[in-house]
Image (cartoon, rainbow, N blue to C red; front, side, top):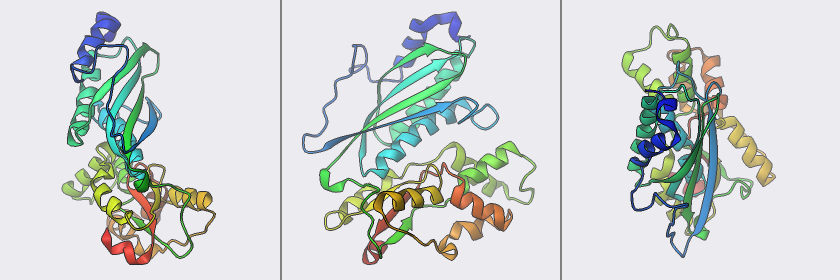
Length: 285
């Protein structure tokens, strides 16, 4: 069954089944953020053929990744998620099942973070486009910005960079990494199709920020880009010790050292955090 067969109202009814019934149904959602916290808002747009394709991203993964990108932005600001809205531009020839699977992917990751879809919009388009707006909240003293890095601080990164790019390359070139064990291949693929925003670190970051400032952002556009953005915003320089990037040696076991370094620094879409903090605080993470 295609979208054109059930029309906008028919599709809306199916979509609303993925939303809280006590919030959906009016012209706008009414939320109750914590009065002691500030509202954080972020939006990301994913376009078919640019950010995803049938070759690399099944619909369930499209939904997951769309939400993950926004939740990662919230984590990068030190904010916990409150709710999301979903804007869709869809081709009438697209199957209803594709849309439902995408929403299942969204619901899966949102359930992990006790967050819900509270609204959105749909329209017809020749190119499938998914626009997510995420709302979060954060205590003023726990806000993480890019512009507060100081000389002498350490750059600390979470997780393994380069994995998402490795997964993308394996999806685009199935013959790549022929010596790669299936378990490791699955890890690469999962890193690309089902990234995990680092909301799990927020309570540790909040604890550190009770006594000091943390500077940072996420690495959705690549580790190298994140470091450059922080330096530009803070008016500082940085040195990256390649020997400290454990992902390079790990990825080099199955791919060339040049590929590994390129993926780690510039691959992007790892949704990890790049943080600047005083050396004595590094072990807190």
